[in-house]
Length: 128
Image (cartoon, rainbow, N blue to C red; front, side, top):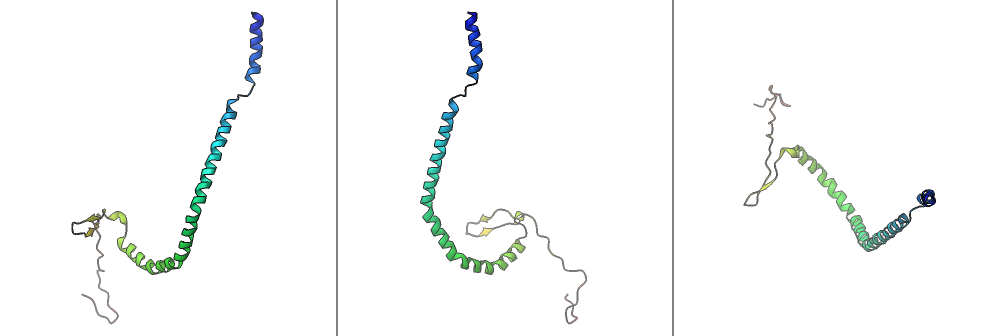
């Protein structure tokens, strides 16, 4: 019995040093999943390629028109932004029954006061 116990204890370190077989199966599973995902993504790219090509052509054709539109609307948008000041100063838009849309200002606008001393105009006149 002592001999059997000694053999079991002597063989324990040998068993502990053997690499487990389970990770190899896991690695193979991950590589199969990885290959499957690559195939799916390649399939999606081949299906999407004609649509992406058409979209690129449409953007190339619309490019000059969009540049002209930006040059035309740019100054007007700057004026509008200067009038609005900060969007946080306004409540959410409300549609009235007649179709009008109201955008109420929640922070009162401070009126600009004229200068206290009237300034003479180019011909010396004073605005009253």
